[in-house]
Length: 431
Image (tube, rainbow, N blue to C red; front, top):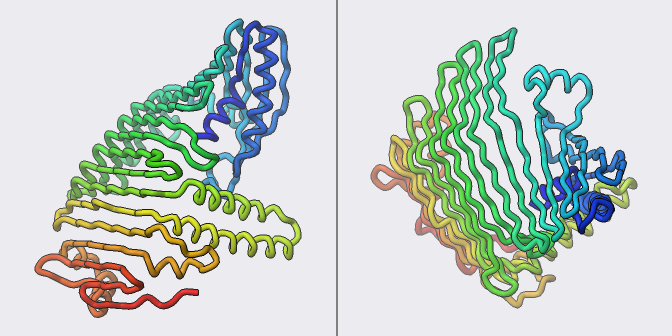
């Protein structure tokens, strides 16, 4: 969310305080401030390649470089925006388009005609409230050589950022797409919608509320068919009490079908409670410093810096868990043609006065946990020779037991003792 708003402000818009001259001056100032803000984000480098300002408007070219280590090799690692700013009396409007080389531009024009592949409009009013709207064009294209067809609906994404940044809202609405191949291959994605609101609590934590839905995904290839129906996801992260965060996530799928085999009513409910904000931020900051060590040219200095930060990670993890937290998978349910899968997991780390220097091992003395998992026997036993061999090994160690038509695992953790299906196993001591 933070990076999305930053990119919107860099390539696209700024603050207006009144009058074309004043709004233009503020727009230019905010443009360069947004570039500085983006450069403070890990994995992103923003470069202004030009900003030509007039009285009623301005034009800029901005280069965004993304860390290739975080992206698929097929995705672009550099993005250029060309933006025209209009300096109004009460607001600034910015219209941005992607810039490509001549070869790519020609290829895109073959598919889209004169429509731009992405258009972004940013409006910032006199009070500093910003709105970013990104729109992709409708695509109806047939490959003249192979006969493959692509039909993609208009995708619209909006981000509203109030001047006080207290409640950022993002929405995505996309009716979907279809692709068909000359050999009978087909991919179809149905209606996709997402709404998320958020307010930044710290540099690393946002309070947020998100809902997402995807009607259908289906595909046919080499005679095999896949169908997914009605995927829904929701999450809520909020400050539960001063200095603590609660976060919950829920996902459900009505049906997943592979040819004639159907898996219905998948559901996962996860929650993280009582996360200490200050200690979590400290851990995230250490991870950032660890990532920065990759920029050290001297190998010996880099190794020493990395060892120092790895040690700090251990201390920060201990400090975080010392403050206590709870992790729950309260519901895991999958209905299959061979029976139902059910599971739950609970891990509780109470607040402790153990010193950070005591190390993570000391925390396990107070950690409590509970696990329950039930899987249909037919589902596991139909997995082939390798699955059966693994199954026999788990049965021999009593890590799973068979009761009637299901395999079960019941496990608890308390006082450094794991009890699995009635058999106690002490945890090895950790330094």
